[in-house]
Image (cartoon, rainbow, N blue to C red):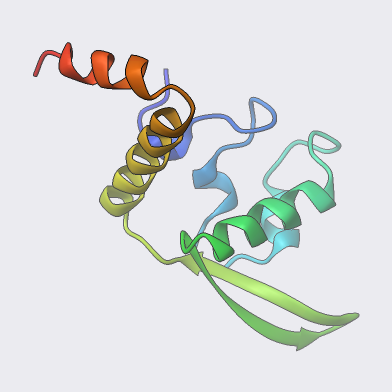
Length: 110
């Protein structure tokens, strides 16, 4: 079982938000932490860019060998990220299954 939302596997068992979103990592460093050939370079880049656009990560564009590269760092602490996940999931459920979601939320025990 994952110890936090940041440890939940993504595309493959070895991949989690925590392993991809480490402070100050570029896509090459993030991918290097994964087992070889478990996830494509494009998948890592697309994931990190989507998380930057959503405000979960910050990105700084740097020049380097081969052109421009993004260096990512967290834009939220772990508590803020957990709240972001909960809000995003509940909003999606409310949009797609409003009645069922309301009923489920009303029946939650504290």
